[in-house]
Image (cartoon, rainbow, N blue to C red; front, side):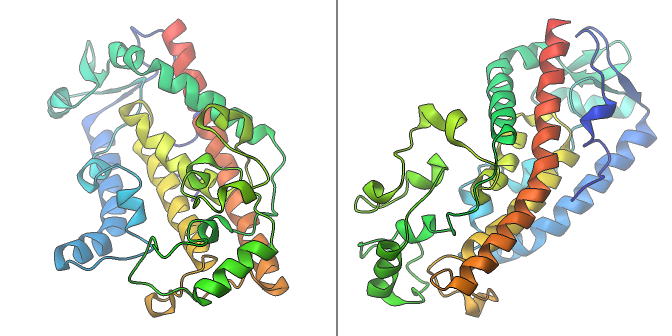
Amino acid sequence: MEGRAGSDAAELTLPGVAEADEVLAAPQWEARAESHRRRADEFLTPHLRRRHAGEPHPVWDFLFTYYSLRPRQLRQWHPGFGVVLADDEAAEYLGRTGYGPHPLGVSVHPDYLRSRIETVRFVARLMRATAARAPRMNCFGLHEWAMVYRTPQLRHDHVPLRLGSAGTDAVVESTPLRCSHFDAFRFFTDAAVPRNDRQLTREQQIDTEQPGCIHAAMDIYKWAYKLGPLVPSELVMDALELAADARAVDMCASPYDLRRYGFEPIAIETPAGRAEYVRAQQRIAERAAPLRVTLANRCELLLTGLDG
């Protein structure tokens, strides 16, 4: 989603670390914090209800298991580095990681930025490198198929394969694997690994990530929340909502039969299904592009703020 308050890095200029770009009075920042909590709660409520009932979900649980941000952490609003929360009410932030006193109130402390600076640099490089490449739209979501290729052990053992094991293996064997995302490739079965058009490594991630990748779009959320209070929570929520939509596409194109969960398959084993996947992939990539640039800009402003 676009246009959320606080997620447009172009309007922010960070000065030296001893100062702040913006001071928010309590009515201002409390309104933003409450708006964020409502938005987070709307997203979280179905997950928390299922968790309380002990009902696993093969699509949505991923957003809370593979990604490590806990619901209570997601609900906490952060204004981002360079913003001071004024008035007595801001004292509650003094007990939170990364915050410290400021002459005008409370803000994320420069020492915390210094402690996270290598992560900031990495995220900036990864976002810029990914954005600079032409998108590849010819993988057809086969990474999920490669994760169950020639193995009796399914990642979602309570969900059947739509084509069965033999049919799934036949699709992998008839279509080239062109995965560019290491964190998908590392879950390939041993039999699938040599079938990929390249052998990916963690060390090469910055050199191989590309903006057409569904998982690269999802991971904007991961990189945003890993920067914690240094970036505004509105940006984290923007990225999470995109990740959820990307996850839906990812699993519709997977080999699993998820119709009883309300997900109609994208039959990538057919020409029509591959065309449908590419259209969905393009829509996700178009939404991811401005978020990726915004996160990169935030990182570069953080680096500038530290140097200043």
